[in-house]
Every structure is written in C-alpha cells, then in structure tokens.
Length: 167
Image (cartoon, rainbow, N blue to C red):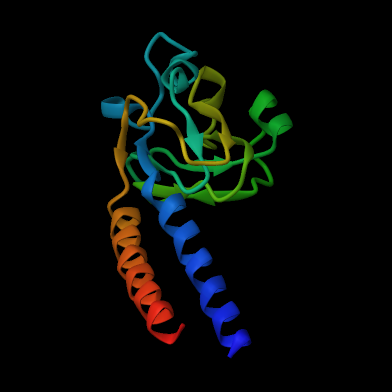
C-alpha cells in the first residue's frame, strides 16, 4: 500500500511540473511580419528583433521563408560568426520551419544561401530555463502547449481524486 501511495504521489508531481512548464511556452515568428529574409539596409535586424525577448525551453521559433529562396540552419557559434555554411548542426529547407527550443544555452541560426548570412540573415539567441515571468512582445501562446497544459491539468485533477480515494 505504501508503494502505491508513493507511485501516485510521484505521478502527481510529474504532471504538476508538466503543467507549469508547458503553460508558459510561446511561439515567436522570427522577424515578425518581415519573416526570415535578407534584411534591407540593416545587418543588425535580427539582433534588434531579439531585444526584449525572453526565450525559454519549450518555446518555438517559426522561420517564415519561401522554399527555394532561403533556408535556416542551426550552426555553431564559430560558424555563425564566420557565416560558414558547411556542416550545419541541422538544416531546414522547407518553409515555414518551426524549431522547438529544447535546451538552455545559445542557439545560432543562419541562411546558407550564398551571401545571405554575410548581409545579416542570421540570428543568435540565448535560451533560459522557463517559465518566463511575463509574455514578451512579439510572442504568442503556443496552442499545442495550451492544449497539453489542459490535458495535464485534467489528468492531475483525476490523479488527485484517485489518491484521495485510496488513502
């Protein structure tokens, strides 16, 4: 009986942490209405875009670009600094591309089309552990995370009721 109670309590803790983490996930459209393209007369466009944004684990970056005209590649910091397009960590060639930020730390993205990175089509962000304290400008709630939070909340309620009945 004691083992059953411990198992139920562990399940409740796991579900509660899932609710807390997924409630704060947001989707960011990189570049907002401009999307993922060559910035016009502003090589710092994507650096400026990140100002006042707090990226956390679970957030999603959506890169809106035309397939065949652009791509997005996650690269190392050195490749980002030098606009090196060979050997990316991962490359997305079909737009739009949605990338889930699944770890803390720095992420670096470039367009590998020749010349695009050098004239500013690159993005570097720092991802922290969530949740953020408030929504940041340019973000929208992630609908899939909201649905997950609802399912987790309902599951947590049922588990709490079951735990109360068995104790």
